[in-house]
Image 1 (cartoon, one colour):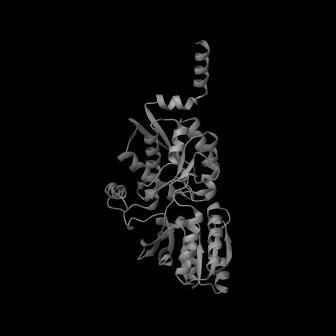
Image 2 (tube, helix red, strand yellow):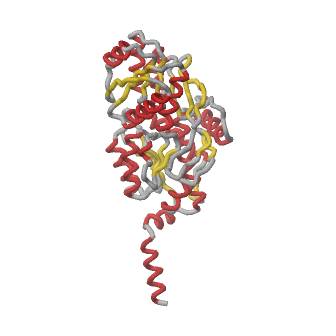
Image 3 (cartoon, helix red, strand yellow):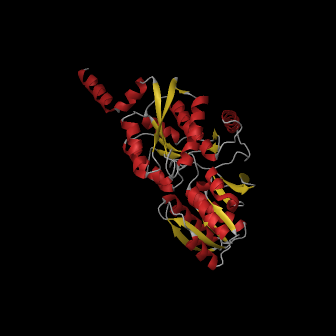
Length: 374
């Protein structure tokens, strides 16, 4: 009998202390480790709108209140990693929502993996974010598919000779350009590269070089500030070919900075409020968002923030426990979840299987165009 008690005691000691702490807490703590300031702050603020709405509509899990604390990464990789660590070690976060951009996600996910804490990015699309990890997941599509979809869109528009503008400081831009190139070549296209760095203001040399080669179109996988400026300088230089960008340009700042120069710009986006609503939860989200924000339609990033929160919450409910290991496994059993941005299935690698929404700028606004399915 004594031996039995010793075995039981040892087994209890092997159970992570965080499990007992979470079970005994009166609330379940999430941390939104988002880019609230800095170069990617537009995405972070939009994603947090969705998280905030999620907590208002679904404030509890397993009978406990959910408390979400925001930690600002300042759009910096080091701050992203430190923010995840502080959330888990200091704030005792049960789950992490974030990071927002791919480079920050790569940094933050390594910490979540080390500390064995479920983490869900709303919008980090680089495939390496989840590669080889057990606890890192996403509710958005992967860049491998986004880049492929962009190449298909480019040829559908009749463009086979293209300049690709790459931000060499962003993992997101570098990866997308590679996936685009691979597919574009298969489709019979020819391209060459123009390089720049985050924060650059003058793109005249790259634009004029591209124009001198007689290209049909520009492909610009990057973030809104630089995409708007490249578009403006191309317009001012007399280039009127097609401009195609990525979900990183899907922010109001693209319109305000780019003005008439971004009219007709195409984006491979994560969703659009005018896309066909595929489930009742998408409709519920859109109606609640428009009521909260005086009739404004939700951005794709707001929808993704909402979905990230709800998918983690749903996995906790299905697991029926505040055991991080079990919840992490349950996240990857998510199948046909009715999200704000569409039906979400998380595969065994932590990746969401979703379509790409094609958006274009029309009359100074982002307009729904079409869907590209996997």
